[in-house]
Amino acid sequence: FISVMTVVYSFMGSEIMGVAAGETEDPEKSIPKAIRSIVVRILLFYVLATFVLSAIVPWKEAGVLESPFVTVFDLTGIPYAADIMNFVILTAILSVGNTGLFACTRILFSLSQSGQAPLALGKVNKRGVPMNALLVTLAFALLSLLTSVIAEETLFVVLLAISGVGGVVTWMAIAFAQYKFRKQYIADGGKLADLKFKVPFFPLVPIVCLLMCVGIVVFTAFDPAQRTSLYIGFGFVVACYVFYYFKFTRKKVVTTVLTNGEPDKIVQ
Image (cartoon, rainbow, N blue to C red; front, side, top):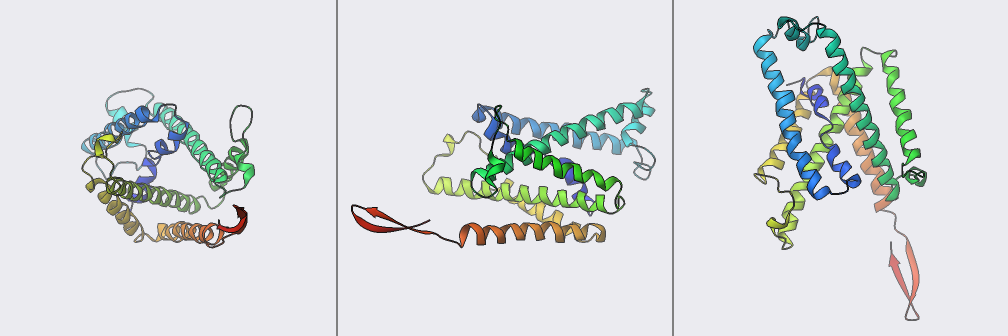
């Protein structure tokens, strides 16, 4: 249970579909299709693969000297097992890096468009790419490479857990938003049949998701190595909310305009 946060880190990325919806030409068809396919992929490539490995490799020997996948490949006589896995891992890392760059760039661009980030991050080049946001994201990504030489035994674990916290908070926000949206949609007279994608077993699915995410956070608190990441991760989330409150909620601008010749005050 304590290692769940580290495992969650491997599942992060599924939420990218929501971010990618803004770049999709036909989101009504492509996004539901992607949602259904990713569930199948997780069951096939994660759950089923782990089940097979657990049935073949003794748990005390798994991952001690080499990847359990390499162990299984060696048992089945597949040559160059280690090289194959290194190629797979490198490909996966490049895919994750590409996804992270896209997601962070897109989010910075969106924040800039809504006035919650510097306007320079919202500028695009001739190809429609928000290059300033991309360069800022890339700069932070390159800084993360320093963890291989600076406090590599502790800092990497903390960053891993912080990334996991970010993923869990994101999933909680998505589940809560979906729950509230569906409730409000029906309350406002919306018809369930009109929804392009209906979450099955509502409201059980979003509620279970929220409870599981809370459980992951609680389990992580019992690990001293990851406890610091909770303080930093949730501390950062709280700081963001405080900044948002004072920057965009509390401060109000009163503008006086003329309506039919008479002064009228508008609170913005």
